[in-house]
Image 1 (cartoon, helix red, strand yellow):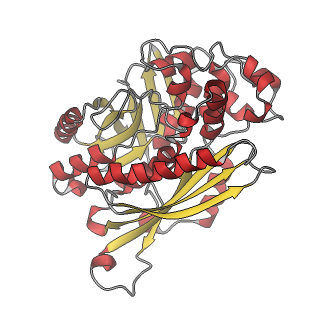
Image 2: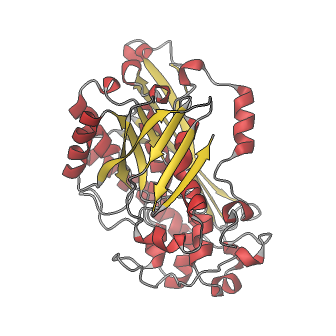
Amino acid sequence: MTKKNQYLARGVSADKKGLKSIVSRLGRPKVFENAFCQGMENPFHFLKGDLSEHYYFHHADGIGSKGSLAYLYHLESGSVKHFAHLIQDAWVMNIDDLLCVGANDGFTFSTIISRNKKLIDDEVLALLIQEENNLIDFFNQQKIKVFNLGGETADMGDVTKTLAIDATCTTFVAKDEFVDNGNIAPGQTIVALASFGKTIYEEEYNSGIGCNGLTSAKHDLLQGSYAKEYLETYDALMDRSLVYQGDYSLTDALAGTPLDMGRALLSPTRTYLPVVRAIFDRLGSKADKIKGLIHNSGGGQTKCLNFSKKIHYIKDNLFEFPPIFKCLSQKTSLREMFQVYNCGHRLEIYTDEKTAREITAVCADFDLAAKVIGHTERNSNPNNALTISHENETIKYES
């Protein structure tokens, strides 16, 4: 089963073709046609002051199947602490998407926690609510304003097998600071910011996996005994040959890291906001120097295909796969790896060579690995194309 699209067979999609078809029929305002997130003119037009010179963004994202992983590790370890960073996952998936349109301050959140109350008790809820407060404190320390407007806790055992967390986020972006990915053009340099390692604002090593691809990751890496013991942690309609087919227990060490496999899979999604905000500050008028920002979440390294027109993206100097992705590559083809996982970097900045050097210098101040991983060329047809060269293999994709 290693060569077919296992992610799709497990009931999840990296390219979301059906959804994209529906959205394309609905259309988007032209100014946001290539924006990473959907936006609109300031809806609060009746307010005075400078809001008329801002765009308003309202975004939604969540943790995907990471809640079931935390639940599984909780059962194995007897500790609720493995739920601790799930709020960070939900919030950062929103913040780092919004970062890609130029947002860097003033985020307002509402969070929805859906649970099976018989399996996820009030102690876990208390931990999650405390985590919201901890995150606000963290961002305050970074001099970034984040506001929590509450949300909802839904006890839905008929619908939610274990735990799901989703969040919505609103923010404003000044029109002259808006990053439009339609400005990605031939001849630009691609700078990648690593998803793995330990920055100065993190407490421990991060595996880099984030929130995407975990449905496949847990089944490719974790051993078959979990299928028999914990039926509630996977889709009963899934082909049984795809369920928990790995070699690891959650407590097995992940070689090359200080983590066990459970902690590696549950590594909190790193936010790039403190770093990118420092980059914005250093560059002054960033709109002149940053032509595009892409968050490699759903779609992994192929996310870039969604932006601008007639672009051939060349990625020929990627990071070496971090340990978690090396393990996954033993079970999954490279073609599928790049479609599902970030594979070592979750954020790309499109710029010129001189600015690229400034960006990597700022990243170094945060102990964040960053480097030039490729460039853009003009594509020979109206569609976008992507060529990835890695480990003596060249893979081509088209939009």
